[in-house]
Image (cartoon, rainbow, N blue to C red; front, top):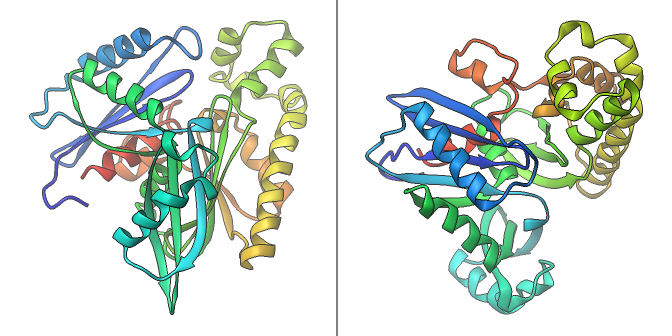
Length: 323
């Protein structure tokens, strides 16, 4: 946390949209702007962000941004190492980083966070990416006329967002953010993450199944998600196969954590575009046989619920990292 509150802009650049969030006098401002097609060009991303900032009337004196990376662009590793200072750890990893991350040493930029210290050992999170990916993100920030404050990962932004929950320090918790083509799973114990995985199943697969079954395009499928009548038994049956595939991958992660760390989640919190399907919560609850909650962070800031309520957890987490 910074000594002075900067009120940074949280910028979440997804495959299908950008999400913006910032605080002004402790009031939350937020906005989502969709791209016309997934994976747009840099120019489209910049124009979309500028359009969103104009709609928010963003005129803060401190022009700082906190943004995040996701997918194959970033790699996370949780490792247990001998106890040492962070500066010494960074020096060691500069020579050995290719042992922990799937990138060549000369192409990698990385950082570490010491999560826990115990006796002569410590648990460390190593996050890294390729240099050119950071350069691309910095270029986008420069073109929108702002300054980078922090580049982190979606997973760590979600952990920061979850700190606003009354439950974050009490139990082992699983967070699942169902994005467009990826679902991010993070396990936390007493506020500290110990496992993270990105699963290549997301809302795009759900939508593709609906398009095939009802002979509609994806834009129409997105619109139908908002219609209460569309959340019917027929739709639920169509999506059960995709839900089950995702649940099976999540269960593999739970089994691994139980075997490796002797930890199992007490409950699961779901968010993201895929969480808009009203029966996803019930499906997961029956499959895992423990409580599943829809995680709406806007509720924490006393903002009236909307159809997009599950989309902003990452962006808000990013904004909170800059406070």
